[in-house]
Length: 197
Ligand code: SAM
Image 1 (cartoon, rainbow, N blue to C red):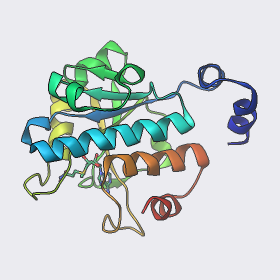
Image 2 (image 1 turned 60 degrees about the horizontal axis):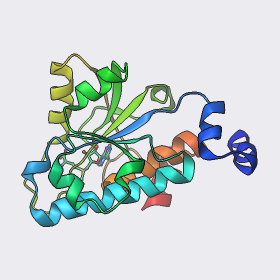
Image 3 (image 1 turned 90 degrees about the horizontal axis):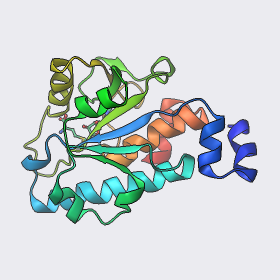
């Protein structure tokens, strides 16, 4: 963090990025887009915008990638489309084009808890899913299965508060915020979750 602070004083985000180890992509995967109502789709777009805002605080914003980004998403999204990375095809293809063969999938149904050991991967995948109707239970693991079918190695990881997923906010941007607090600020998972609640 000290290193980041020092660079931030004098360097632009792009210059800062070039001085630091390669930063990962944070991918919001819209595989389940069509299962959402129009209102829910609007919420996804808002959470993607908020995710961009968060990432820009730490990095450049380009690290935010949205996959399966179709025309409807692009027309509904009010954030800066030209400053994020959008990919209109499958996540696995986006990863392949970027030479990434292993990812962390943030998944509340995972067995294993996210830890520092996972921070070396080149991409974190968050499901572009909003739950209001309660009809999308266990949709995140499906994203993992789809990636594995395409040959991507998937580490499914959950975020917990004092050992339990109950109490962890499940909004896309909150999940991203928790990861960033842990990775960049070196906070513990419990601290990060409390700060994002
Ligand atoms: N209904 C989905 C399910 O049952 O799998 C959950 C969707 S949640 C609103 C949106 C995304 O946030 C998930 O796809 C996942 O990537 C992430 N997420 C939410 N809670 C999480 C947790 N406790 N641990 C890890 N990831 C989580």
